[in-house]
Length: 235
Image 1 (tube, rainbow, N blue to C red):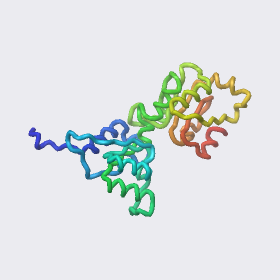
Image 2 (image 1 turned 120 degrees about the vertical axis):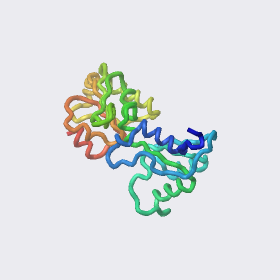
Image 3 (image 1 turned 120 degrees about the horizontal axis):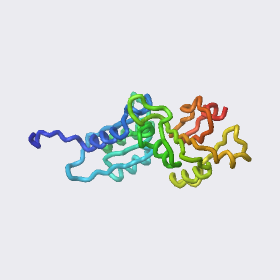
Image 4 (image 1 turned 60 degrees about the vertical axis):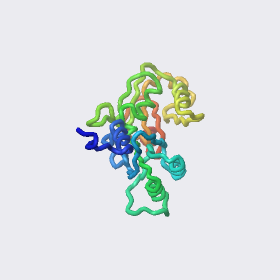
C-alpha cells in the first residue's frame, strides 16, 4: 500500500480511541456521557508535539487555562457536556464552555463512570490501596471481565479503621476524611470493632445502593453521600 493512500486519523481521534479501549463506553452507567464528547477540526502536524490537559471538572477556569496553554485535548473525569441540550448560548455555563472549546479548537473526552467501572480503574485502584487482599466488583458487568460497579476488598487480614483512614489521607493528599459509624457500633466499642473489619467496599460517587441487602460488617468508602444512602447503610 502506498503511503499516500494511508488515511491517518487525527491526533485527538487516536487518543480518544486509546482511552476508549482502556475505559470502554460499554461499561459506563446507562445514560452517562462518556467518550469523545466535543470534537474538533484541528489536527496536530506530523512530528509536532501536542498538549493534553487532565482535569476532574471542565470548568470555565479550566477552559481558560487550556486555551492559554493552547492545549489540543482535554481529558475530563466529569462529563462535559453533562446533559443533552437543544441550544448553545453564552447565557449559561454549559454553552460558554462548549462554544469556548469550539472557538479554541479543543477536543474533550470524558471517562467518568467508565473509569470507575474498568478493571484497574478508580474504584479498583482505591480498593487495592487500602490493604492486601482479593478485589472484585460489587456488581459484575455482564459482558466485560473484571469490570463492574464498585469494588469489594476482602482483606488477607483485619485492618484497623484508623490505619485505613491514614492510608487514604496519604494516598489522596488530604488532611481530613469524614468517618460515620454505623448505628450498631457504639463509640466506646470502636477500638474493639475496628480490629475485626476484613471487608471494605469502594464506590466513587453515591454507591450505597449497590450494597442493599448486604449482611455483615464492612467499611464503605464513598466520594459522595446522598440522604438516601443513610437508609441503606444505617437502618
